[in-house]
Length: 628
Ligand code: ADP
Ligand code: MG
Image (tube, rainbow, N blue to C red):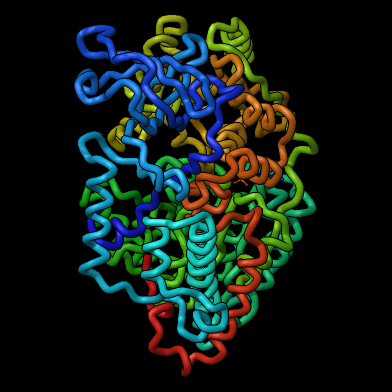
């Protein structure tokens, strides 16, 4: 946390002590109990203690704590509230926090912050109270709408969030923050469109010929799906208009967005202009670079790659080549828009996985005032009507079909000692196919981690294993990825860094360790990496817990529909986490989610339109100046 704002926006989880669960606890379930100590704390080892605890509902649990000094400050028969994790195989609770019971706390929703060790709940609450006493908090929602919807002031809302008096307070907080978030987003969206409409003229040097495009597609040997054909037509006719294009191309993982953008970039080359393709990670940029090099190998198109971690010398060469038009298409991370890069004649900007860039950067591009067409691509799996509600100020094309009629990825939940792992690995290798092995961590902070798994599999499959994670240096990443892409090395062990966009058509097996550690939408994205050429493929979800939250993973066994998965994920996570949704399927959002909040999107979109249409009335409002 760097600022007061960070502190005030650090929300707790709320625990209602009146509805704590004590039955049918699954392994590793987080619990909150209140009740009394039934036995005195006793040393279990030098650094751990245990005691028995009887809950208000008269259930007895054995509690273990690694905080042995608690021995001296917990008292028999005194009432406490405690939180912890339940372990089913030993029938114990691993203590996390313990507080003296307080009658008032029972009635109110109880805020619990996730804090680092050494920082207590009480102390953090004091910090928050201090910030409230010194800082004035301004509304971002314009007065006009504050009044219209009878909203409290933002400062009241934030106070309720940190010191709620009842459950209704939390509902008010939620409603406020969701609306505020949606309104900011909708205003930004409407603003892009507005900025473009004021100054959206572009001079077309040359109309792109559909015939030439068809010839090109034939030459590279692809038959476009109907969806792709339609998308190409829409995009090219946008490009042929003398208005700047702002179009979102949406399609689930594997629907073939890249190819559509490549065709657009080719069209852009035909009209004599430079194009750029921006990806969210080095790895994805690198891969796009390889793909485009291959596809354009028999053309005159010159392709450049620019990523953050290149040497200054390399960057200067790129910069000069771009300026002198020795490069036709530049591929890279956000570096392709760094200040040093000056295009000779930029005609088309493609932004892959746009949800990772956010609307701010997008508006910056538009602000820069170049007259390039903009194509955004996103894999967020939402239905058309919803997409229109959310992004309605942008033109949308959706790829409904997959290049292969049916994606045959078979998903199975397995145990880590299941011999199916080696059977399938051996089969894949024998068939010259590739394999992903995914772990939730890089090193020992988790039992299943990239480096340990790398060592383990290297013993079984010498020279056949490589690895990738975010903390490697750039050259090592490129080397590892290249070895895997070219199938020199068939097994890639990686964090979820490969979740976004990586395309190895012949990969037909993915093994995800400690799968429960990932969100369902992430798992869906991950398995989107295999079976890309339509061949039968396997995704093994490793989960050693017996009766645990397998229900979540089963959804993946049963369906391949990204939207359905996002929806189920939200439903199963339920409440209690309402202010902390991370994976709503729309990574730009913190509070709203695509499932429950369509109405809020609708309202905020209308309100945003009202603001833009009455810009004079709102011109001094902070909402028009928000940057994330
Ligand atoms: P995404 O939409 O997730 O970005 P990609 O563009 O990476 O998907 O495409 C997935 C895979 O399908 C790639 O290997 C790509 O070459 C292949 N592909 C795309 N379109 C077609 C097509 N019309 N015919 C055959 N293969 C295709
Ligand atoms: Mg992609």
